[in-house]
Image 1 (cartoon, rainbow, N blue to C red):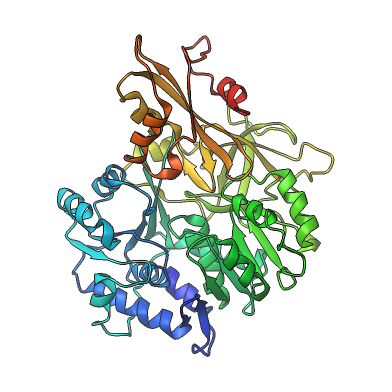
Image 2: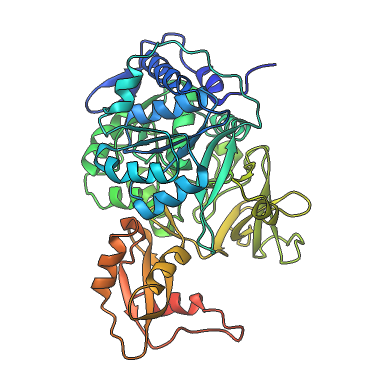
Length: 510
């Protein structure tokens, strides 16, 4: 039986000549040999720690090629990779460590002091550092290891990564993605998006979530294609590297900011064959303006932490047009349906709950069997929590899906998932606050902006700036409300539920 280990599958796409450039950065280039050898050193380091089977490796570091190779080493060693956003603060990280109980934790040097405290509390025995240039105790220790490693034999159902996501309850859930989930999605996308060995991917996405770590990186590695690896979106760097690239993935904010620069032209995109957008809805105006300015049509797709990619507008024109405002048909091997509250499939054009199934659907939530069961229907479909419809308009093919809302009130700002309940819980604990509601309102740059609507206790005064300052000390900046509105009472329906749709309408232009 062939090895189902994700690294073994990705490595099968590496070029025969491994001396060529695999990862290009402004500072230095990394060859395919470098990927193989450095991931081997990291894997040898991890295996030398005598970790239990399926041990978790939690990583909260800035983006670097070395961080990618640490990820590859983790799956290569048959361990489970747990990426954490570098913006997370101590209170957030403490929960993840307590829940996942990782055996290894890798952090930035600047966070080492408070990370050590949390590691002791969670009984995490091994802590290393890695900074944005790749340096730190992790690389130092790995450099003493052998540069050859026999990739572990993994079964398709073995957990490769755990990604923490959340819901309306505010308690984060660890979505377990298997080697089989990740391999199936990588192979499907390689074919559907026409990845080629001569592609050059402009990689500016973070690597702590599905989009940058799995969809982008796996695509390039499996195709044997070069990546231009940048720490984040930087317009000067983007404009510099676009003529050298053939493919780019980004959140809508990236495309908005490119359009805002007069230097972004069709000539700059002359070698680009594909622009892909995801992680948040792309405004129709952005879609159309990008067509005009670049001469290219953005491909929108749809996925989740629990499922990786589910649907995609076609890459090959023979399969259909790319339609703005839709996320295209289901990917090969993936099934998508739209149902009513009774799980009855709805007719084309009718809006309902989006449910999915396929080899890419996650194994379940870490240590939450009841929650896992609740998120699947009795006939085996995963409830995405999104609301959508197929077709519904004369210019939209009947098999194209459009996402029209999110039943779980998820806010997506600049490509980051933000869960209102988490922020509301903190605000409600603050002095002088009776209750709060956190909503997302349209924003031309970020897609959605976080807004807090706060009701003060009798006789108390709420200062929005002070509230924001306190939040900044407790949660990641991207979660902090950009505006705070103080009102006498929250609108509610007859069942007492806060009517967030009323609030979104009231504050969308304020």
